[in-house]
Length: 174
Figure 1 (cartoon, rainbow, N blue to C red):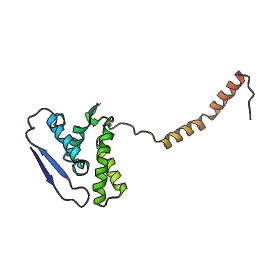
Figure 2 (figure 1 turned 60 degrees about the vertical axis):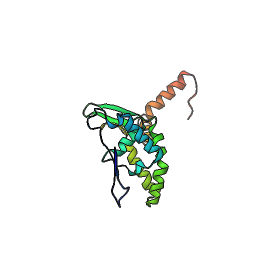
Figure 3 (figure 1 turned 180 degrees about the vertical axis):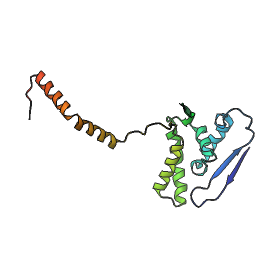
Figure 4 (figure 1 turned 120 degrees about the vertical axis):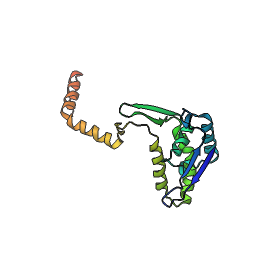
């Protein structure tokens, strides 16, 4: 049985909560129960506004996503395991709801930047990263690291290039 609750909010989306009854004694997580997943898949296919209205605090948004994309579990020695989503179909799922989220957000007066930030926060909920995971290096950081290496190793690299030219019998150009 499904029951919806809605509450008004001036700060953002109107949170919506779905309550599923009759599964308290089931050992499976709700997203592992086929009929629950079929319901959330059907709901998303006919009403793709869940990313906007469902609430991460009550885990309704997580249930929507986990029922629509493949999950993965990453082991973390300190914390046990972290549940996330596989990247294979997650972007496709987000894209399938993005237009609807942008439509609703525009009606609510949100800017494109606010809506993009909102979607990015949702995406962050599902990245299964361990607390000690390194943040990927940006292109600018990589460029700076490479330049610093070149400067620090200038003498060694120059000597290597000169010795290579001498071995091949080529003249050194200045």
